[in-house]
Length: 179
Image 1 (cartoon, helix red, strand yellow):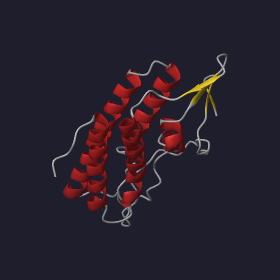
Image 2: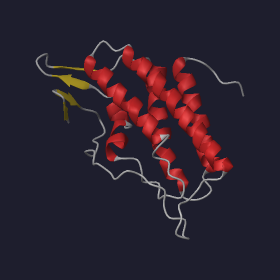
Image 3: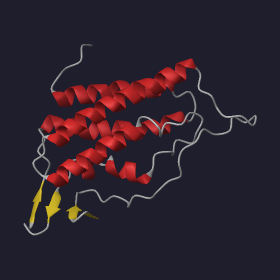
Image 4: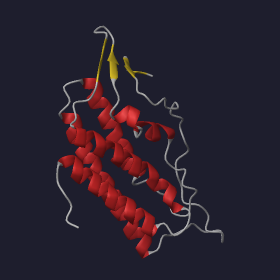
């Protein structure tokens, strides 16, 4: 895929991003809008907080990249992490509120894949440790799963995903969670 003069390639072909309508809370069946209860609002806040912290970590990874193409890719991934763990989680919705562009930027082939540089005829990978690569892929997969939790009693699933996202970032930073 040609992105601003840089071809991003990877082992996993990805669908082209497609714009999606802005998410909105669905009808509650009685003509009103769905209002999350206190427990649901807390779970949503936890997910959003985990997403913000993971995005901050990815932005720090982007800041270390000597290649501008990798910085841009990681910055887009950070933004997608925030969207997937925040605005795309629509309680009472169908779980499909995450736009195609964000889904694309959460794919492993985008986040840690090689970039082809025109003029230099080389491909490079982002400069990440093995633990950072693994944690980044895990964080992206976990965030991408969050919008799909809203099809029922989503609190336990969303809490588990937020915990796992926090663990992935901690592992990527080199820390260990106390059990």
